[in-house]
Amino acid sequence: MTTRDYATIDLSVDRTGEAMESINKEVWMLAEISNEESESAKVHMRELEAAGFTITSVGTSGRPTAFIAEWEQGEGGARIGFLPEYDALPDLGNAASGEQVAAPNGKTSGHGCGHNLLGAACTGAAIALKFTMEMEGIPGLVRVYGCAAEETSGAKVYMVRDGYFDDIDVCIAWHPQTYAGTGYVSTSAMSDVVVEFHGKTAHAGGSPWEGRSALDALELFMHGINLMREHVPTSVRMHYVIQAGGSAPNIVPDYTRLYMYLRDKDRAGVEALTTWARALAEGAAMGTQTRAEFHVPYGMSETINNTPLVENCYKHMMEVGAPQWTEAEQAFARDCQRNFGVPEEGMATDVRPISPPSVQGGSSDLGDVSWCVPLIWFWYPSVPQGVSMHTWPVTACGGMSIGSKAVDGAAKIMARMGYDLMTDAELRAAARADFIERRGDVKYISPLDNVS
Image (cartoon, rainbow, N blue to C red; front, side):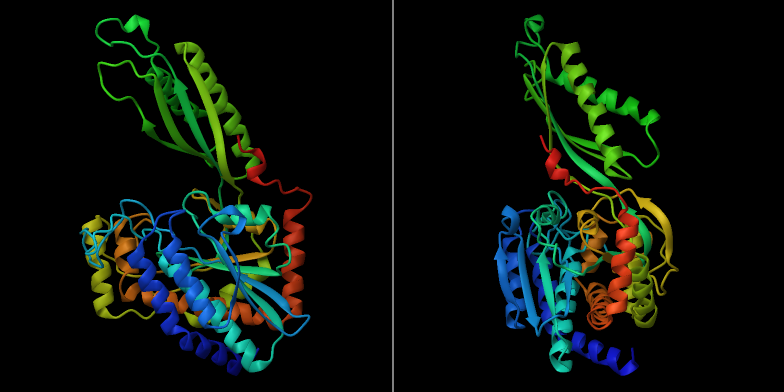
């Protein structure tokens, strides 16, 4: 591929800059949480339609804020998918400030995972690829999946189940992070679990023996979960919140509810954890003479990586490089770090080497896409070094020029990869062969097949 070719795709990204910045800023301000991001989805669809894409599905797979848009030219070309996300997180609203202060519009939710940036760059890269294909007469299809509710019941899992990725050659994605890098990192498989206990109410002071405490059952279940931690692999993560724990101390609680995530390196591990947790719930109910209800409403799979795509991504990442930060941006990052309580090292300025195989503790519905189609995803800096995701500095940086520069660089990397995949049949074939080899004989079973 020639330098002139990449210059053309880079210029197409620049041409898309206004649309990307509109998506970025508007979605940051909207800060709509999972399954409520209807206006954020409309922002993406508006810019896609303005660029010549057709919205082919809204409320895709029964997910109210999901959509699909596509553009196609000619016959017999490649079919490339982009995966924007746009949901925010509760309680992470923040001004574009280096300290933790409320958002000026009063929003308590905020983009503490940078999905305003993620979505803007993915949609922008798709539009830029379309512009370049038009200029050069390249046949092919560009499809944009509006990936709603990634933070909770991510729409990608439902779309995979319903076959919306079956005709795609490769999918491309990225995620905001503290550094620029790609490699062989897998997200963890995960299951949502909801445990409810039903007991019998009574006066806690006058006649507690007449009651059966649902809170006692919940506490016994939690104790059992915490005893499990000694006897599970280091790849396991188990975390929960109590959503209902009783209403008053002088009333024996007759109802409690716990919501938890069970994670492990693969679906088999998660299913084994789930079976164990279910037995603990039943035992806790038996020991307290209450009744347990154990629900698994949703799950995600681990990620399959892809060597040809990782190598192609890394090549473009090295050429595009990390953003060139101004001293004002580095000072903003250091303010965030100081107020967050981590070393004041500023923003990352280089690209990390390709990451070796590992399993990350977090989960993503990208995993289920990777079981259906070759997938490439990478990380690009929009967050000060040492700051964890799902925190207020992520929201803050996403609302100012640090976030905008991340969008531009990530979009260039994705658009370049899309261009290569559209014009290089050998790269597509190598990615497909690697995908088949890595998946092996393991049959993909949607986590949704095991919901209860």
